[in-house]
Length: 355
Image 1 (cartoon, rainbow, N blue to C red):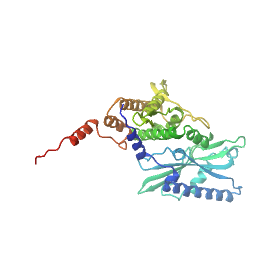
Image 2: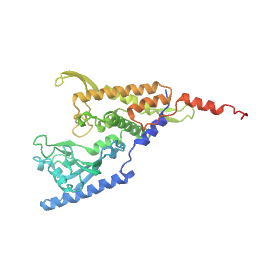
Image 3: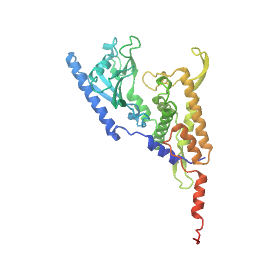
Image 4: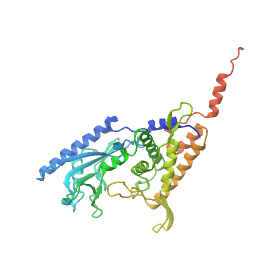
């Protein structure tokens, strides 16, 4: 087996995106938006003679659990939940009301107008007509009947499919953060980032219904990853083996698919379901069509074969050359064993005394 741990860790350094505390520009964008939203909501409540409720914010997504990667298209994605201390029962007829209020608050903040989507309000920053950052703001209210949070689901134009969905953003953060500790956590974060980069490379041309959500890959990794550390025979120290750990995880992901007859498509396809561990425990792959899930399966199978090739290959150059096809050129390729031997042989040859 080729030892490419150093190359994988260098790859990780090339693609990783730090948390807010490590990225001042993203942190500042988040803080500017949350401050404006908070002031705007307070003004809205005051103008409508409503006692101002508590307004809190919660980091969500990859920034909250520190698994972010640098986006391929440069369009950074920030998720920041807005928790309003009101009861959803008072707004059962209009779950999108506060999303529309936030849209109005932010309407002149950026050149690209804010957009109310089913799960959130999206604020997009741009430069030279191209998006550079977008901040997703899901909105939550509580219930008079329990202590849970409920997500405002739906957009302005849809008369149906508007509802309050049971949610637990902090519970989800905790589920991922506490899945591993110490060295295992570091390996977990690296492997999640490897898979996200694979997704960026292999699903680049897919629409949103054809792309497996990053949160799905992250949750499966939190639940299924078996960390691998081995003793280095030279140093006697325990070292990680990301390649083996990733292979076992990809094997598990593949095993989650079911081969079934799909009536709508009238053909046998591989489909996948995996539920959130908290909240309404909904299927994280619900947006993907059956055919797109089948395509997802094929890509997982190809990745599985590529990793197995790297595990079987003795030359790190050949192993990394194969993996670059899946993870992209941020993964460094070491010099081939053959070339290294040639270089060593040439440098150790006796020099001539003749001119």
